[in-house]
Image 1 (cartoon, rainbow, N blue to C red):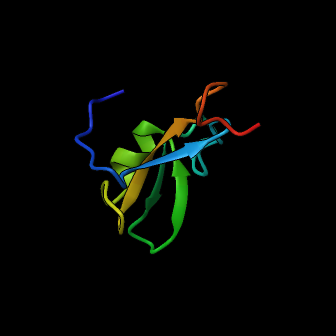
Image 2 (cartoon, rainbow, N blue to C red):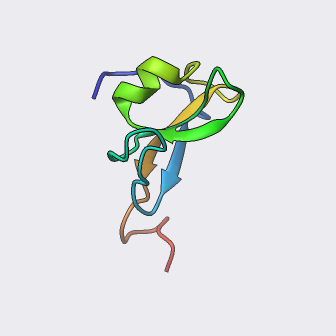
Image 3 (cartoon, rainbow, N blue to C red):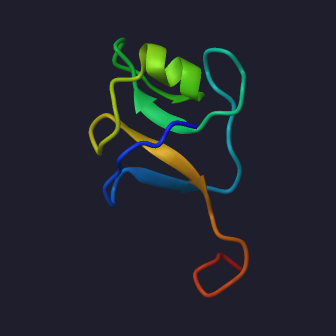
Length: 73
């Protein structure tokens, strides 16, 4: 995956990666599209349809930590 410059609100933790709404591959983004819809997108579809990274445009999906102090029990 390309290295995206992100701020503190540009990531969203998930238990598992969902499927891309457009192609069905593993999604790595939750992003606003040009059609005004928020969708889970894989990297290829994000580059095609996503508007960007940032609180009002999209977030990179990251897996929640398993175990440890901050994990859900």
